[in-house]
Length: 297
Image (cartoon, rainbow, N blue to C red; front, side, top):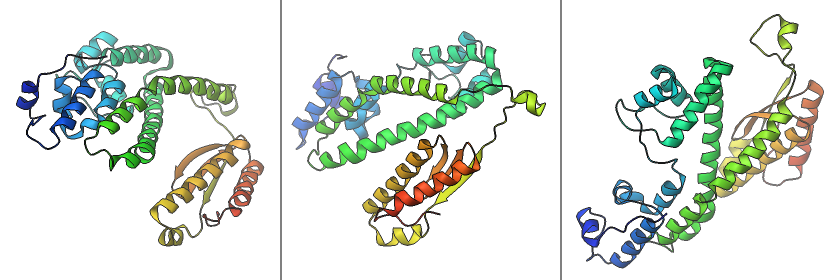
């Protein structure tokens, strides 16, 4: 979506463009491109120190902020303190009082959450928001890291003005709708895989809680500190990625679930102790064939 191109006088007055600079032509081309994909003059000013990344902002943001927290609370029926707790649980700091911080898309999402709270209860919805928020934060971080390592780094030295990076940012961010659809499909598969009877309260006598019999397993790399000392940063990263993918594949293959993964340590759950042991043995066998990782324990 193209917006009206600012004049060179406006760009100069805003400190965005110096026609006497050696890179004036490239700078102006970058600015014209960003405006052509939807950036406004205010956007250019706000992101003046990171213009090549502005394409991502333009494509990704869920609309422009229009509503204050007070207005959202009134429109959704959520008490302001509950709205604040939900926003924090989703992974974002409290918005300044009286500032427009929520878009139409945010309002629609929070109206859905308000409806869900009537069905599941306030505490359950806030807990679910915390899980969703932390999971999506990890997905976003992985996506950004993948772009930086695989796309931006190879071209940054060849593109000082940043036009190629700006175009790559815009093109990568344009894939977001497809990613959202893929996540929707995968979530449906995971819900089907996680379905179970909610009759645990009959067994425990405690209403409001679910009880599952699971085995908890831990896997870590023996000698990973020494491994870090003699491998380069790139080789170490590849070794840890190989460890993570191997463990994840082994756990999922036997219908387990990875609970936490931090560098050289993994916590997982399995349907029973026998299965947990089988997973651990699978990991040892799979990693024994590699030359970069040390022995797991």
